[in-house]
Length: 236
Image 1: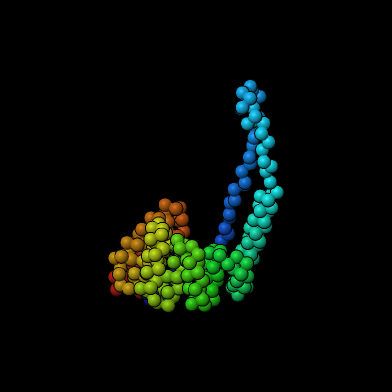
Image 2: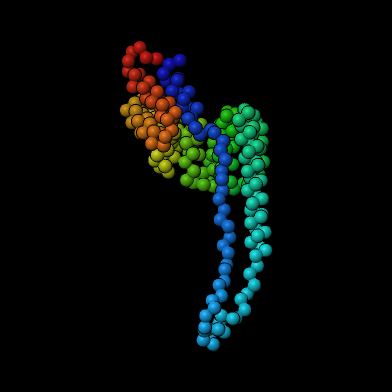
């Protein structure tokens, strides 16, 4: 396999973006209204004000709302767990079905649309995957992972200019997004922008190291070495 083909293979199989993940939502408990009676002397006016009956506080409604919210979170978690299990077993069709049910139940959930795009990509349903990622961005415009994912789909079709455009959008949102920097570098290499590719790879390596992601840093260092050695006649 030539160096170009090796790097193209790496480019369309990103280092981390396909991993289905769980989202933990932290919900603040409703505040509790506490009234303290002070045992001290007051003027008649103060006493009258202090002893004025307070309106009843309805605690039933907040409790019901909290229970409903907890139930929705549990339901959401069950959908994601099922899709995770199917995905890890290689059952991408089953994961797709679970995620479509999830989206039908939670149509405004950007994460669900993003994960559906990942599963569709694994099934080589490329245009559908792009549509899912675009819906993610519509719901959450700063979703850098979705821009990166669209770039990966374009890269799989050798649509390098479009891929680079999407990677750069992701980096505008998060300049330390090392996976996007790596993907951008590979696309730059494919379009004969060697120096820019090397610069992007070096930055990605530094970020991975700063994040203590040693395995990723090692992988990218290997890619960097291949590109640096590519000027040698014997390297293929």
